[in-house]
Image 1 (tube, rainbow, N blue to C red):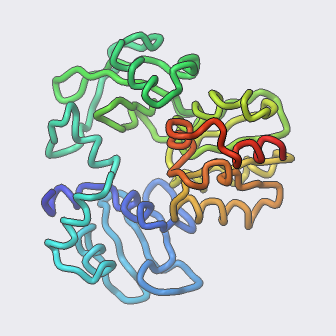
Image 2: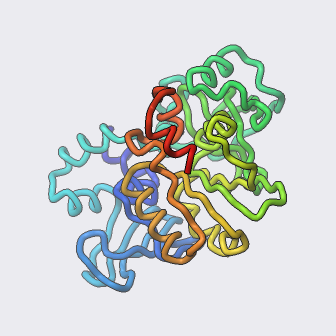
Length: 292
């Protein structure tokens, strides 16, 4: 990875990977507490339109490389070495069939939407142990940069699709949350749709009653759901076991007393799907959790 490639990655995702969530945001900008020091009022501004930052409390700013040089107190070479080890989805979205593209495609065309049936996609779902949940998914064939691709599609509330396969992780259309409303007074919130599919796979085993479901499709969408959570008598949170997940849980619990952090179920794993893939069915924690 070079500087141009690293600077093309969404700074919002870089901040999220470091555990920093915005205190407020809109389509054009986001405000954060100072990532370099403690403060009570947000002075760090991210301009989403140009993917640049400015820290008002210190009068400095720049691109991704400038940010990480200060954050890590490191050289450009060390920053790029760090970036290579990360798993940024906005960089992966430039990598189709392991071929890196210089820039994100600006246009796309959905060629076909159908039930999941391609052997490669079915095998991918089987590897993630959610092959029984295809009712929530579509097989999407699309065209970008004069090339055809296909992947598993999970629809969001704005009509866009989260697209996944072994080689890409992108969103076609507007980024948004996905809600599945069944008319219940309880809500389960998931960070990604594979966690939701994992829960549906385990729902009977965990002896859980049906509920409404909300999938963020990115923890950065958490600010879009604040008003919704208060409408439910009970909210269960199934976020990742990382710093961003910790901050998201804390933020929601501080504003909603009716929430429960359910990550004890998979506390030794990255997320719910990771636990499903690697779990021991006789795990004592699972049995205790089921009897709560």
